[in-house]
Image 1 (spheres, rainbow, N blue to C red):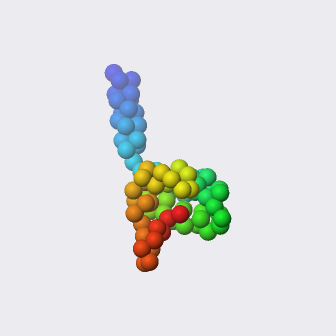
Image 2: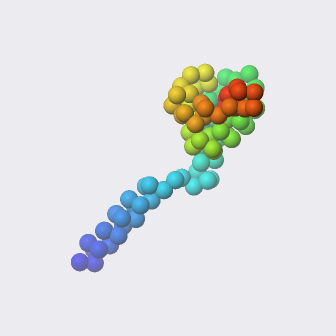
Image 3: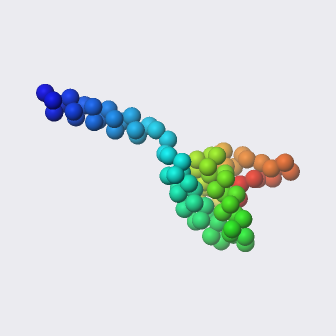
Length: 89
């Protein structure tokens, strides 16, 4: 009986944690890796990575490559600067 109760509690815990957002440290690592890949071919990779990481932390996603696929992350695509241009590289 104790084993069944323990398994139930364990499964409930695992299910509950699967719905939680990743920790900030995990998100920073995720953003750093995704932005490094996205900005690899940029003319100004350091600047690209800086702004990409800011957008990634706000949007929780990054499109796959530099020039296409912004539709994969609508928040990233829709961020605009005060001149109406895309804020996210």
